[in-house]
Image 1: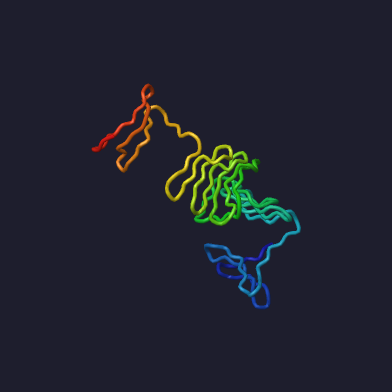
Image 2 (image 1 turned 135 degrees about the vertical axis):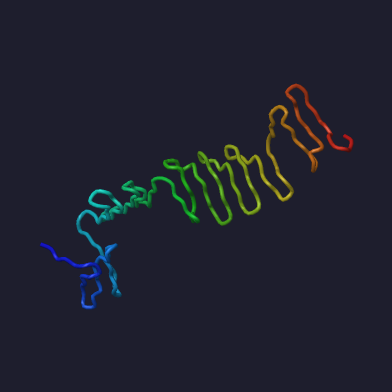
Length: 193
């Protein structure tokens, strides 16, 4: 037993024929053409959108999650405290209110604690911080390098490997280094030392 409609013949519902169900020869439509909403409700377990009878596309669980699938593989789901993405997330812009935490580790994060401030923390130590005028590099919470309007301030030692050089002057004419055996202060420019 069935009711058969030809292509582009619409089954309509409502005084103003607001709900229409039809097939145009290529595509099928459930269309609300009125001023109200098209509501799909369930008092059962869920509302599902599937490819055929077996491949999930979307699932809306009553009093629970919303799951979105790609080729029947779950990629997005809402959870009690937000949402979960499986795989990569691509976006042209993401706005973050405060912090991005490493899963299960509240002391390791990338943070945006206030306007024009940014920091990276590992194990509860702010290892890298930036504000509108300064960059701070830290070791176990202690500041070791700060950028200033005149250059860089270093607290502690600056270590270089053998043959690592500190260069001074626009062309690096003055060199200070150690070759592993001997130490050198060398002027490689046109002037004198």
